[in-house]
Image 1 (cartoon, each protein chain N blue to C red):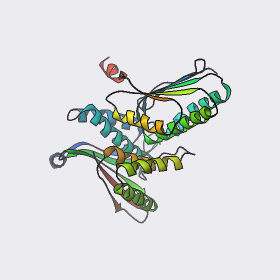
Image 2 (spheres, rainbow over the protein chains, first blue to last red):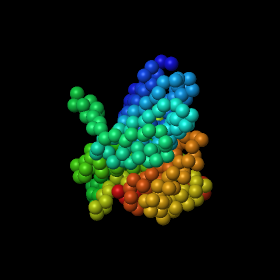
Image 3 (cartoon, helix red, strand yellow):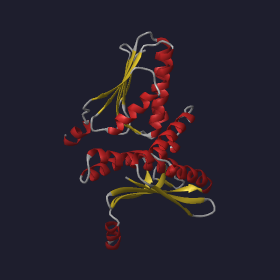
Image 4 (cartoon, helix red, strand yellow):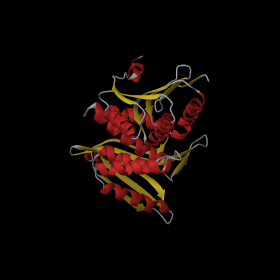
Length: 136
Length: 175
């Protein structure tokens, strides 16, 4: 399996999956027009990886905002992880939030409640790249 | 135009848009709204307003029964959105045409939402999330609950009859 890379847009997150390292990164805003279409390849990729790979798997989420359809997609994704975890796969999820973003923190806490996978909610100052774009 | 401007000023309207909605337009409006609110409130509060705006605007984009075709024959949903201030609260009013047969379902859902407290909304959200897990639909059911949770204040709504087939749905969210 190669790498999955989906570039960030104003309303959708950067998705980067390195099968070699077993790391999935999800970063940015998530309010795409069609969350189902957006997350479908990610879900497929993860499903394939979980089925065939032996490596431990780490998920790093740095989401600023998830609209409700993205939340659903994320729930489905986490459910896949939970399933694999219950079957013995080594998994962990790191949920990063900016200290000024209460909504992101609460969002992570809610997902955490329903999962038994190691789920770490970590405060981290997230740089807003858009600010730099405007100045240049 | 003077009377219109005066009317907007009197009602403390900060932002107003009526017309076709599409994703990139919503993205741009988010930026405008964020910057405008940040002049009066914290970044975190501005983010909350934007987030509620996104749900309302995307509901118009996904569910409005009123359509417009552009020069390239592309179809867009139409609606109206207003952002304003009333006393110490901000409010977002969204309006769009719906099919009459959708009115009952929407009304029942919103009435239930109106009656729930913070804890009740959280449970309702989880219940709706779990039930729909087999498909990622556009999520309007969840969207309305999420709006209520994030606003923490009142949600008012009305339906105006347009004709035998259509109604106009207006929703006001206080923040």
